[in-house]
Structure formats: structure tokens, C-alpha cells
Image (tube, rainbow, N blue to C red):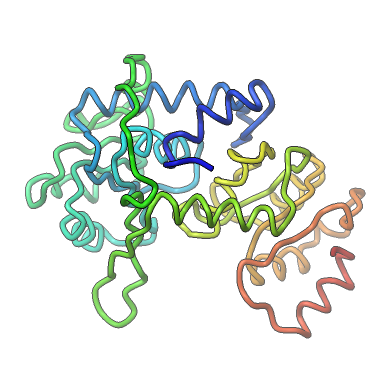
Length: 300
């Protein structure tokens, strides 16, 4: 078992090397490539002054950059603060202040709304995915391109803080739920083993990366060598097409997603045997709907 999340990419590269780890919008990454990008991103973040124990907010939609950023933060021994992309700039400001974030890693569509955070919080840097960014923002692409060596791995206790994930804030301000490295790793490992995920699996996922169940999927890929076909957002027709294209064995989602898939006209044109894919439901599904899905899609 790993001591901390930052050890996982290097171990995955050693064990699974050039096998495909991730497919995102027709870009393919091996486990070796994932680890190399994590090392480069960690080197760039370290050069900016991100140290072990610092908190970094991760505010972006699903992408390969999101996954690289997640592990790069952990590689430095810093604390990951993954936040919902549906939060408003005002809500992001509250979260960044509350957790004492030193940097925010985001996507180009989110930058304009959060530029002022550096003036009212401890945030020193806003890092944006892409190459062309505002002059006050650090380009993630250029950060990686500098190819700086990551600092020597720090010794991190399994029980030390790895993640601060905020609640939805339905009864007031969101509250930061603190998770240790041990908790995140065990959750990913045990759930994956319970579901019997392995290196022969191809997983389709459109759940938001900041969500705890999507984290389990990401951890499973890196620890057990499955292939992840990641979608930026959920679209029933696109998911159905990718299940067939990549011969998926696992499709993760919530009941609403499966209902959209069930009602999609694209389902009538399928040639791929749906029974080859196991669909894991991330929340409770009403029995009548679940029976209908099982009967129509013929999955386990």
C-alpha cells in the first residue's frame, strides 16, 4: 500500500509502463506519459514556490490536465482542494480563503471570473490550462514545457492531510471535509477490489473529477492498470458511441445518466453487445427504473 497519493503515478509507470492509461478527446496517454507529465507539472509548481503542506485549489472541468494537476499537487506533498466547476466566482473566493489556498489551477473559461482573488486572499498564483492566457496568469502548458525537475519526494505520513473537499453548502457556507492520504487511497483500492476492476478493463467516465466517486475511478486506473476514457461532460450519444468504439467493460454514472442513455435514439443503432459492459451506479436507483434498465440494456 502507498504512503501517500504522490507515489502513485511513478508506481503505475513502473508497473504498467506503455499501456494506455487515459483517453481524452482523442488524445491518448500511457502510464509512462502520465508520470512524466506529473513530474514536469510538479517541477513547475515547485518553482513557483508551492511547498509541502500548501493548499492548491483545482477548479476546472474534466480533462487530462485535471488529472495531471491532481497528482502533481500530491507529488509535492501539497494539499489538493478539488472544487465543483458549478461554483460561482464568489463561492470560489470563499473556499480559497477558507482553506488558505496558495494557488488556483483552473481552465481558460473560468479565469476571468476569479482574477480578483489574488487581491483578497492568500492566493499568489492563478494557473490556467492552455498556452494563451492573460499576462497575470501562469500558463499550465508553459509550466510543463519548462521541464523543471520535481523536488525530491518528501516523506509524508499516511495519516497526514491530502485533500480538502467542500460540501454543497445547502444549509449555509460549504464546509471543508478533510481527508488523509490513507483514507483516499484505501477508498479507491477497496472499492476497486470490491468491483473487481483490473488491467483488462476499459472504463467510460463522465462524472465530474472533483466528485468523490470520480476520484475512486481515477485512483483505480492508476493502481490497477485499467484504461480510462474520460469525457469532459456527459452526453448520452457520445457515451454510447465510446462504449462501442473502445469496447468498454465498465461505465460509471448515476441513474439520470443511464435514463438519458436508455432514451437515446442512438441506442437503436448499436451493434456492440451491451451485456459486455458492467454499469456501476454512483447512487441509489429506484427499483422499477433499475429493472427497466437491466431489461432494456441487458447488463449485469
